[in-house]
Image 1 (tube, rainbow over the protein chains, first blue to last red):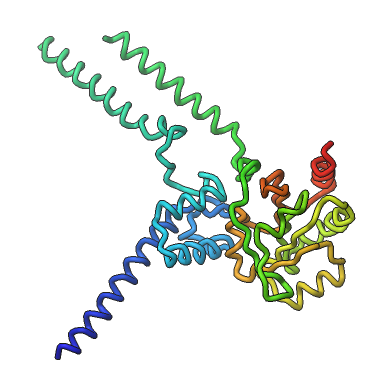
Image 2 (cartoon, rainbow over the protein chains, first blue to last red):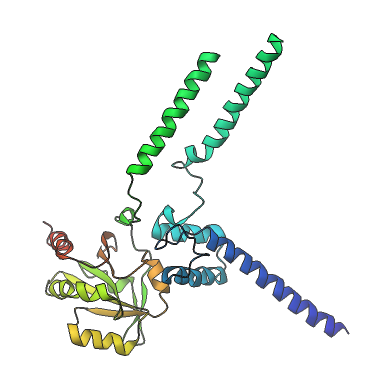
Length: 121
Length: 173
């Protein structure tokens, strides 16, 4: 009985690990731009380039590389253009901060207008 | 406060116009120009003929090396081949050909018909190694110096102008 449970646990663990890797892999494919396609990610494309990248990503995951390490490797080879999600760095700071800036300024204007309307009423 | 809101609105309007202006004037074609000046981190390519690998130190004694990715099934590779043959006559440059996702017999036939300009011939059967070189289609060529620094990258077939530019670099003109 114990042996049966051990065998089941072994395969269960294996399938969980496998599905975990597959999930990360698919997430990475979705964030990679297919450079030879029109607006398609590597996940969506079946081009030669996308197929090669899928093999490389799979190999890198098998080697134990993290998602960020894989993105760094690929952006070193192809530039940041290959990533759909821009990196959070000095060059892209404005890109990341602008929506929050608009939100804060918009909020302040809204608060001002509401206060003004209340005072007038 | 109303003046501030007006100023902010005008600023946002000008900013959006600026974004449109810059984006619409920017070329939407991807290129790897920004990789020029970078060092090739690691070269590990399987030899086409022998059971050995070409690694960094194989190219560190060459003044210049042109790494050319090609395949027999690639029509533009046939077009650029004459320029590679011309370049192979130059003394201070060696050419490394990387046969990309190709059949050995077809590749050999290609070289037999058009000539073999390569000092080193490697193969990348699955195309995995090409990613380490930032390759996304073939033909592509990368000119490196003895420190493995990328001096020039040509996407697509080499032409007479590319050949002229490569000659200028290798002759230090």
